[in-house]
Amino acid sequence: CTSCGIEKPMEQFSKNQYGKGDRILRRPVCKKCYSKKVKINKEQAEEYERLHPRPAIGEKFICPVCNKEKVRNFKADIVLDHSHIDGSVRGWVCGSCNTSIGKFGEDIPTLQRAIEWIKRTLKLFFTW
Image (cartoon, rainbow, N blue to C red; front, side):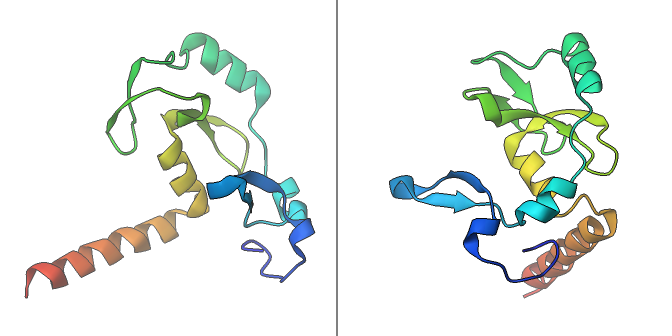
């Protein structure tokens, strides 16, 4: 488990999605750790969606994180981002950015280290 660091049997990890050839992919976090994540505040989500509707299928959307223009093709490609600390709604982002934020654990020092890593390695690359 990427959260608790304990090696566990595959059955203790929820099915997440399907890969090539309908291969089952599982979450990297065990069911026990995943259940501790704070879910989105439903009332806040409904109010946010009422005031700021999700782009319709076929509609253009500019992600506030990556700043890329996307055309919404699927249900999950534009998602309502929220804090896993308190459940508060942050707003619509592309699915890729939402996943990336989650993979960094919403941890600002980790994100800052990632930024510094990229800056350092780009400097090395361009000073050859």
